[in-house]
Image (tube, rainbow, N blue to C red; front, top):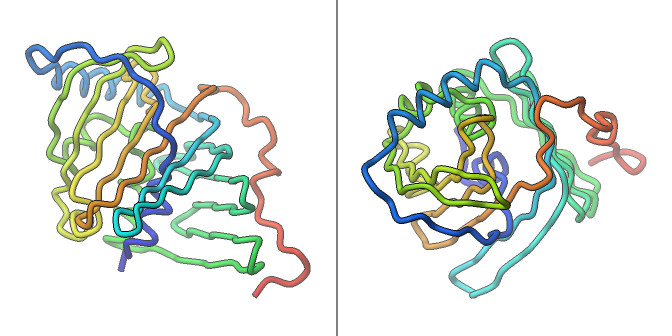
Length: 225
């Protein structure tokens, strides 16, 4: 079962970056999805800096983290690695999610199959290599118009999952996607309790070699719990 905790780990969130809005006109959704379809065929890998901001509505508290993340297409699946400045390292590969936390020196391992593996892939490919057709299959999409982030024109898409299991974790998700590269510059999630996560991706290295793949490896301090 894909829990809210696992969903939040897969939907890495971060700090909101400034965006200049262009008033929405007629929906450009069909053209955006078609462009994502075309560019997804060229997507091989991407690495980016990430900033994360989690807002807890109950205590009115915001937690901010930073780090780096990569996505690597291997055949029809996507491999992902994340390292944050608090010592958290996450790896998703071949249907298995591993999360290391340096504080307790602990590794969590979650193997997905069937519907859960499909959900893992749904989360992972939001704006990083996922086709427009696959996006439309999994989500009800509202095109909220074009914006500019860090000088890049992006399309703001609001997503409501067609999967009740996903919708139980997130009422909706907003992504700011650059369809020409099929990469997301910003991703914001909203859960039913009113908590939000916002991820900003910057310095995106598109289809370039991952700088130091070994640095994303999970390494315990001595023996892990």
